[in-house]
Amino acid sequence: MSELSKREKIFLTLSRKQTGYIPVIPSATSFAITNSPYGAECRKDSQKFAEAMVSARRYFGYDALWAGLFQGVTSCMGQGLEDKNGKISQSGDGTIQKPEDLKKLRPFNIEKCVQLHFIKENIRLLKQEEPEEPIIAIMDNPSMVASALMDGGNYYYHLVHNPAFVHELTEMVFEPLTLCAQEIIAAGADILWLPLPTIGGTCISRQHYQEFCMPYNKRFNQKIIQAGGKLIIHTCGNWNDRFDLVTTEGAHCLHIAEADLGMLKKTYGNTTALMSQIPSVFTMMLADPKQVFAQSLADCLAAAEGGGFILSPDCGMPGKTPAENIKAMVAAAKEAERILAGKC
Image: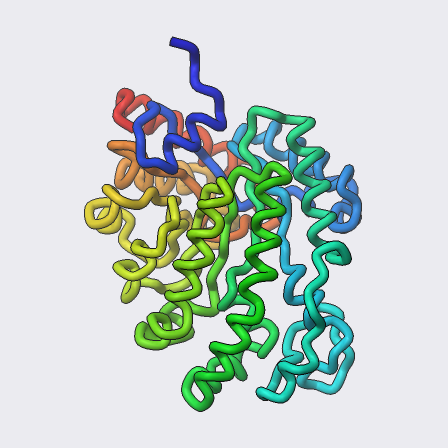
């Protein structure tokens, strides 16, 4: 039997299968750009972006390549409108303050979406450079886009005071987001990684999550999977009161933070793969390599047995993360593989 490719190993991990391999996948877009000789130029030049991603991955020996962050629906639909401060917005953020503003939203034109073309070109170059490495693209889901367009505080206000407004806007952005997700997957992205910081327990109640987010999450996640993509949900912040909900929404994997990893493995490991939560700042950036190794090994031993586990910091890895700490995280995964003796 031939050796599994990197992509096959990670796909099997996302399907909660044992491969004897523990993938290490830090969210490393900003880290790779910061440590590239090109710096911020990478954010507008796909060739430089791809070079930064590939160079960092090869040097540190972690898994997968990041294709960048897509927020093109927010910018295309809200760009050119006045934001809450009366300024013309380029990002689209904070441009929808009241129901009447919905009429001002620009129709989404996929052909004119610059961000979409950029991320597709990133994917093409990454695939060309490292065809065996899985490619991960970052994007928002419908609730996250609605929140961005309304501005966070205004979104939370209307969850209580004008629910119909929130639902109408979330529905308006659903189809454009679906089209973009399908395009990104068709371009070669293997995995979509959806960070959801504004709809976790730190920000909204479980009740509001069930009413305003879950229905759209389930539909959107299903569209991604039907298009052939793998799906990782980043439960950024405290989601401890709603893991029972998010684990029913169809994602292959949860990238967690602020949770009991061992308990999640025991409770949901039969249905959902897990991606771990080494503190990005306090451990990865500020601790020494021995501490990083110890925390990484502990995470692996808490959740890797039986398969379905990816080792990772809990959020985006800071640009100033020491090289020795990243190498310690990768080394810990290898040590855990040895200890678990093929049972991971």
